[in-house]
Image 1 (cartoon, one colour):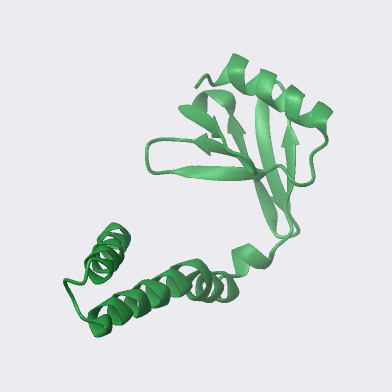
Image 2: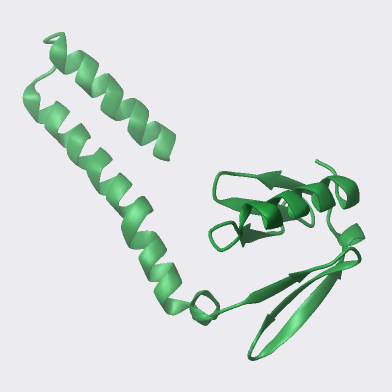
Length: 129
């Protein structure tokens, strides 16, 4: 849907600037694009994150050579490294995949460079890309 809205907005801009359509169609396309982007980037995440208690909890992650343990004040869960099928590193997170549809994120914001280097080496050794 997002791709379709972007293609429509781009096409309406091209057609407007080449004088093939009236300004109303271009403005409608721009308004639809703006509403879609605002809803996907701001409204939808806010409504999801504000309603779900998990996103309000504080978690502590323990990474060892044998396991990963995720804890909060309500409990915890431990995974062996062989439970993960792959990982991916983005600018702000480590994405650990159990399968193609199930994963969790480890944020980098509270990690120092030494911790990230250790985690990268461990992920390469235990999980692979």
